[in-house]
Length: 244
Image (cartoon, rainbow, N blue to C red; front, top):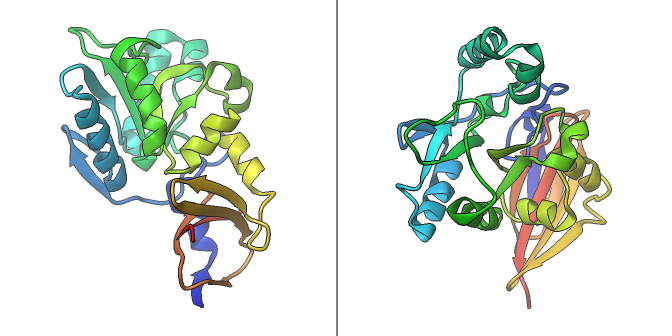
């Protein structure tokens, strides 16, 4: 058996953290530079795979990735002055409530001479749609969908993608869940009753662990695992093993 030690710091770290107007970002991820932007290393690695696979280095531009708290504050204030309160509240998150501060979010645009920084053009057709469809296989989700606005409290943003990791991205797509809904969904599953997802020759099990204090979990020796907090009250454990 192998053991995992969990404590409350795990709540605020990992690719599945929920950051919105209710749950502020409370950690700091390690960032790397990619195409003159900063983002988490896994995001840059898998984004580069998609770019190469579709050969879209000139067709799709990175508009915005990691932002500091100060940058997010300036963007919010400038939008208030230029666009007004209603527009800003629909499309710009408050400081500490923006996914861009995590390094896990990217805004993309169809490459052209003039690109709108707040609402870039990323249509549901052509090369942009090809990116959108492929991105789920590499751990990304279209974060703010049109029919989820009452849940996310952010208007439809077809240009905003969020890395959550595989297979979580595919589970969300297949069940039409936004990230807020996914966290509620996964809380149904525990170490002794995990959610099972089969991908090729791999059996993937996912479960939630509430963290009010430190805990030790025991897993089988033949599994690989990933830990991600939810930025609320616990952690999601994802394990992989090969089918017999």
